[in-house]
Length: 352
Length: 118
Image (cartoon, rainbow over the protein chains, first blue to last red):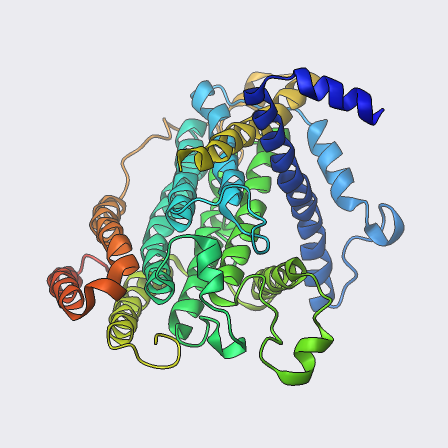
């Protein structure tokens, strides 16, 4: 069997071989990611359920564990309605345009030292660019639907996303100053040392702002006015149904996981062990593979996403814009200058 | 160097495919039974009054313009942040002047009320 495989592999041309290897690696990233997305929706319903003292889904499968599978199958069997007044081409392109960047951004994410699909120098720039493309999906969906609710939702969402992207961009620049590299692997390596060497401490305001801006970027509660069901029904995807809707849903959750993973990489030391530099504990936890730490940190942020949704009431739109423009941007600019000064003066003990 | 970007390109293609395939499957598997009420835009049970592509508040436009200015600023900050270690105090002061000018503009638009939503 193995020999047969080897002989077949040998006749495959070189370029095709590379392509197949790349495709296999992509599948190795995307398949677990999709599973994570499916079970993140399940976790969301369970966790929020328990926070509100109810059970969450329990019917499908043992303790409700097959619920996401059942949801996916149900959406697959539902009719995709294309409204008569819509721009049909754009209407179908929009979900794809919001999902593709949410997935492709994972190419530059290092899961542990060396375990990254594309070890590109401009990693962070690439991710910033791709997350910016996601807003087109929202705008095009709202415009193409030719429905008032969708249109209003898209306008709100687009203005909100671009506003928070500025604060997020400034927070990223802070990380770049501290790490001195755009490569995500190098950013993690720059945090080596111990818990207090991670960037969450010197860049604390940026860390908080990054995460809150991430909530706003993904249109999550308490910043979910874009879909605010009590005022504009479901916002930009009100006309979508069946699988077309499911794609938007996938994109939103894939983006959440991406934001959480980036927060873990940039501020909590990615794959680094939290016990590094602590005498006894460091040895005791040596056996844990680094990727476990990375996934644990990512899960921590994902839990926060769900927790905030259960805790905070929705912001009013003018409050959202005020927070983004009048609070976050001044704070990030000021902190950026402070960090820049610290790096130039080589202050101990992060920047020496 | 550039071969590092091949996986990125392939990944973009795969991402698009993952967007297209489920929708295609949806069209194949799901029932299709369109009629004019179902295809009309959702509007609280009424017939749609008019085309939904209406005039919208000019503030959205203003936000977009301000966003371009600040996003460009971030684009300028990226390379500066990487080499800050090497260019030292001179580089820092140069960027501080640049940021200072932008902050003056920011304060101006704040005072003018461009950031008010009411």
